[in-house]
Image (cartoon, rainbow, N blue to C red):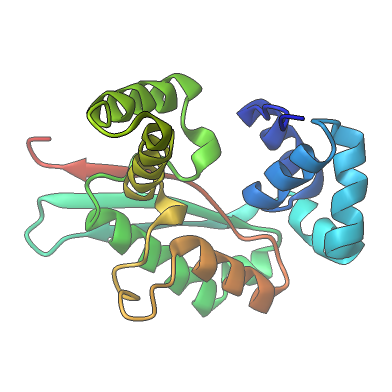
Length: 201
């Protein structure tokens, strides 16, 4: 039996309902044949109501952090949201937002906050290129090579997948740092969006 194809739309709907992480939602949907209600139940059992309630709470407070490089040629704005104004004013929360802005400034290739923001057409186009690049390899390993290259590409263009520029030694990704802060604060911390400006770009 082949695993059902799970769409980004289904993952987003489950994330919106539960606040669980993208990979958790994808796994839940795969385990439950794409059934949203059954997947919510599955996540409640796995993660517990408390974790889901925290993740599912609307992140309507937050901050906009900025970073301008010393040469004045690169600037970044990042919106990071949370549940309460109290946390939005917290120094650790503010510091995290500034660190994310600094990382985006140092990463010209970053295009999306999360994997589920990547349009399916963009993924398909990249996959076709990678499949053609692997055309000279044995047929049975071509899909694996193409999938590996797609994963590497997503690490380059997705902010949450990237190792933070200040954590190259311990290899902590932005998502890991976000999850740690979320756990420490007891609130849903969400990197909502970013804009990177570069002179002449």
